[in-house]
Image (cartoon, rainbow, N blue to C red; front, side):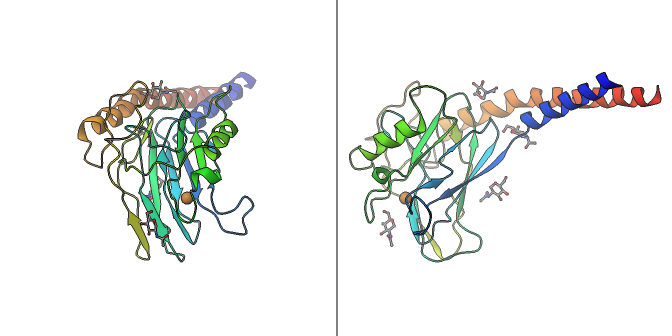
Length: 243
Ligand SMILES: *[C@@H]1O[C@H](CO)[C@@H](O)[C@H](O)[C@H]1NC(C)=O
Ligand SMILES: *[C@@H]1O[C@H](CO)[C@@H](O)[C@H](O)[C@H]1NC(C)=O
Ligand SMILES: *[C@@H]1O[C@H](CO)[C@@H](O)[C@H](O)[C@H]1NC(C)=O
Ligand SMILES: *[C@@H]1O[C@H](CO)[C@@H](O)[C@H](O)[C@H]1NC(C)=O
Ligand SMILES: [Cu+2]
């Protein structure tokens, strides 16, 4: 009986850790918020493959972006990176503007910044964040320090598909908010290590289908195995009760 409850709790823990998470990141804050308006809250999260990170543009008034960069160049758009474009929100809307990114590779850090220059560059004020930071020298605080001493943020426009995370749709922009897209970054963006993907708008069919189809096919067997485990444990628990 003791063994059975141990097995049940272990299986329950495994199921919880394998489930896709839904995570919320606030984009921008208010004057009164500790740390000021130029920040992502939280600015460092962990998210496994298949998890959805909801970027909610809740800093009002605000005019921010969620733009993928790299540790090496914190305030420059990453070639083949994701980019929400700017969302201007002057007064509260219902719902708030939001943009969902689904994690496609949780094994490598996903760095991002806000590319807004008005009234002063947000990235250089420290408006940066990371998903899945790893132990070592490339910490969030090292990244933020580099951002604050970097040159003016890159404004080039990337699309929905990123490196390690992608969106399946443009941001939700309710009436009362405004969406701005810049000029394509494909001609100027620095190269991403290990990817030849071009940085373009939502029409990047080739890189998009490659990176988004990889995850479901590798994740599906895990889900099936876990379901099987749960059934198996249920049968064991049932047997233990009968005995
Ligand atoms: C979790 O994410 C994977 C990969 O995107 C997907 O195939 C699966 O359906 C998701 N599971 C749930 C419960 O949402
Ligand atoms: C919002 O940002 C966009 C892109 O930088 C800019 O074109 C627009 O003028 C800004 N609007 C306000 C009110 O700051
Ligand atoms: C998440 O997906 C990426 C890309 O397919 C893969 O390399 C990585 O191993 C996956 N992570 C886990 C924990 O399976
Ligand atoms: C973002 O994802 C969350 C959780 O899956 C969902 O409830 C919400 O409707 C999505 N928002 C958009 C704009 O797709
Ligand atoms: Cu900003």
